[in-house]
Image 1 (spheres, rainbow, N blue to C red):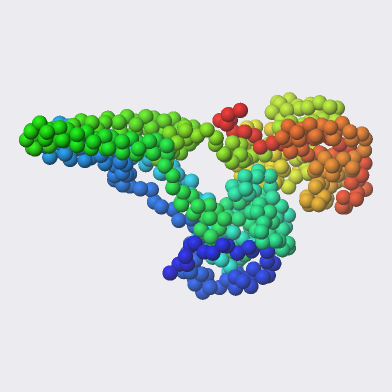
Image 2 (cartoon, one colour; image 1 turned 180 degrees about the vertical axis):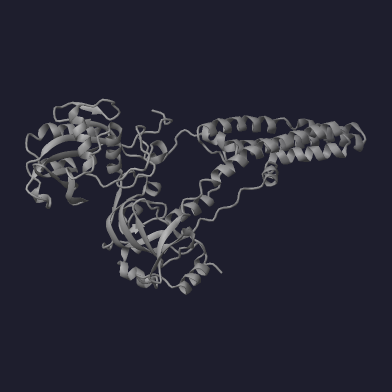
Length: 521
């Protein structure tokens, strides 16, 4: 029997050391035994978000009758049949059937489109169990499992880090921030921290951009942060303005019909008409007063609007929600990945002569090519097998900034060629405290250093006037760009930041997460 999937507030795993988390989870660095895994799978269930199967066509059709106006029309059809008014009853039933078919077709497409979006947690994961490394379906993970992650992996569950090497993650799915997040295994953090500040935790659905990690699973399925979001969405119940107005309209019609029938009956009795005749006249009045054409008119209009929305990549789960969207005056939308492409991209280059070169230019000047080549050289990312001039980043792994610099070099065909001349002989990895990274290459004239990083970190390593560079950096940042400085020069030997002196600034790189083409300016 599974635990209640609605437990007390989740444990603040980031406020404990890695060893303490292992102890609380009754786990160990070598992983769980098969017997422990089996017992925990029975207790916690699969590591997946429960998804209701799409409703069948019959259920979708019957759902179209569950509104007050349709029920009122069904009552009218039943009365017409009882009175022998078969043409009226047939017309009303035909309207209701057409309305149900149109609504069911539209909602069925939407249900199946939404179901296709539900695979964020299910994937394979590298797990240590009984000191053996194995590749498993992520749905089999349980709390206490030891998971190994590398660049390009999707985090399969909520994980407390035990080891981390130069680890950065893309958490934009949960936080909306497109910039990579540095993670560490050693810190013990306050319990009351926002999700984006929990640097010792990895959350399901995040993407490892760079580095390597080993961690212990602390939450699976609905107990993960993404599971909490899924549970909150299941509890949301709301009605579109159109539904509310139709319900109010139905109540008004019902009240008006009952009032008119009562008045007619009273008037007939006063005139001394036979009760049977009064009854038939009252029923006929009631049936004729109900607008049987209204449901089909509303459904067709909403179905047309839903198809238009579908052409704009918007899934409308139920038809009345189309009108609900049209009634909005303010829409609060996540920016990253919704209005933007969630793909950090080089927008332009600023050169030391004061000129600016757009990244989309086909024939850049020599200083821009030199700057792009240096950005590709001081780089730990890798592109997929087929990146081309269109900026395709499928299969790319590594830090988002490094990927953007490689794509620029690929577009301009300036990527440094491998070989003895220019072979890497050392590196300074990026650290938040240094705000820069460097690589050392061996050239004919000696050891050469290429540096990229924050303007304030790189400029002190360079010779020459820094005022124009700082002014250009501020201007680009005010325009919403993330700005990197790149410099290069000869050094005595590979080493730490202290050997980086007297470099030549090559320029600035301005990056941004571009708007989607369909997003309104």
